[in-house]
Length: 626
Image 1 (cartoon, rainbow, N blue to C red):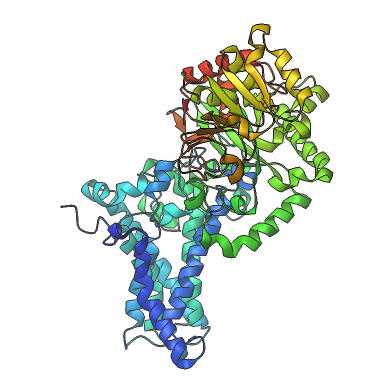
Image 2 (cartoon, one colour; image 1 turned 90 degrees about the horizontal axis):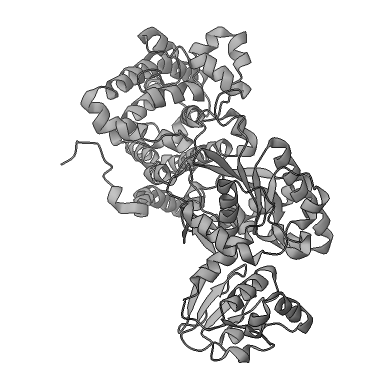
């Protein structure tokens, strides 16, 4: 049996733990029904409103701290937050649940004043709460925190909290019930004192609790907020308010900086880390060693798919971005906000950093062009999109990035010739521009069983379709190429070796594949078109978005993808619909290009002779088929 109060009593409930709020919601609903109006005099209503505001505080701090385009130069710890930490902190809001339920018990006591009996504002209560915070909460937390770092108490109750390598606002709520009770006492003491003195008010409850959460989230944000100039101008301020750097030192070294918010108590207790202020200055100035000034070795240049998927970015909702993309109905109310953000990007934004991870000492970043999928099909937007991509490439070149890989529509043949436009316009680029399609073709080709003798290929004259057809015909596999353009077909056929050309066959209707059980799909298929496939057909695909599987008697492959090597570090977000640790093949192609140190561009048509070379290089570097 584990130590008492080392685990949460509702841990086994999963998401059903939120039913614990049921009695509060029920009381509010009952009072609303009885009075016919919103029961503003009910503490249950105010506790639920406070719950929402507290959750919003944590979320906004998380979003801000992970907007790398704003904060990356002021990050305290350079490492990324990986899936292990995200899963570990998944139930960070247990703290909020506990405090809400405890507050509900106190508020239901006959001795506790009702909302109607309180003033909205009482300055005496605020002054008393401040005094009690300094005199009671700060020293009580300091000594309790120091006690939690001693011997068995640390291993039983506090080690889990320190196991998160990179502090985040959600880390502030992550811990055991014992830690939560210590925080609850520290938060509640000023309120209890003010109410006991008859100076409590509604504004004090909201203000004190939200300010407490605000300061906790700030300290755990991993982004330096306060300017070092403020401490230089008012030296005493150093002892009145902590900083993210200050807390990060405690989190890493564990033997210093124990205070709640005021370093004064560390100074009095002899536990103040002497490096705190110098390191804070370095981080604030962006000169701290590590990521702040580091140039990425590899950049994956992506774009947003649509408004709904834009809410999947790592700085929006961690519970969404750390899982493969799917539509969450709970996010629909904020769709208008996401739509407004799209308009803002359209008119006044430039390419920005979305996420990063480390692989064998190399920094890999994902940048996003501020354009959405549908905009790539607006003729008048073509010039502007290419300009955004060009500026991103030139920026990467100026920074010293080694490889930049173009994602999805950023390398569209009709848009820029698969990147050829930029390489031709800027022949002296040091950064290697790649489309990654060589590895995409390799992934698709290596999915095809070795005993297959005939395939049906749609999207046959596209860049990928051409490479797949030419590769397969060399292997003496008959390729039924669906295309109405005889000119394009003949052009591809003439590229094949003379002895292999007869393996390429032009077809113009889906009926031609009625007996072929291997379909390679590079063009969207409707249910009617899929109907022509015989039972037992497997659909390999490189069409975006992927086709919908209407046939129960057939199987459907996923988009070409590869799993990153096991030694990847700091990866904590999924790439669109991909599973954890899996990236699109074009992303993986750029990674291989970087790891191998190849010094050529990979733009335009796919070099069929390099398909096997790239595939072997990917496997050699630890990438595996997804």
